[in-house]
Length: 192
Image: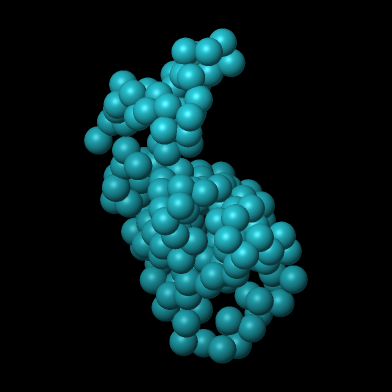
């Protein structure tokens, strides 16, 4: 699915009118086009399914030795997203992704790219974690995946309750990370 920039331009112009402003005044006349280009960039992930994202980042490398490998953890991947309820910015988001390889590993930058692409959609923080875990499992062949996300939501900080210090923490634990409390505790210690 391609993002329809022409429709976005028209709708943004309509929103400006609905707000009581003149979309043809100097400061706003290029705004619909700017917003359309920005949306194309920040919502790029909406063009792809989770399976298509997994295919994009599917290159993996065989590990020498046995299949019993230790945890791989990439933490503090910075992403942003937009809440699907208010289209409000989710910001200062840090994603940590861990997995236990099953004979194959992927490049570390691919983990950050997966997190970034999944976040570039109208999303819920909980779904971002579930989508990343699904893609990581598909790409690595490992059912042992954990995704921990902490972020701020402008739908809580800039409107509504207006609580500037509120942060949301979500965890998605699959396989051994869900079943093995020692592994879970070890992961949480590494995240501190």
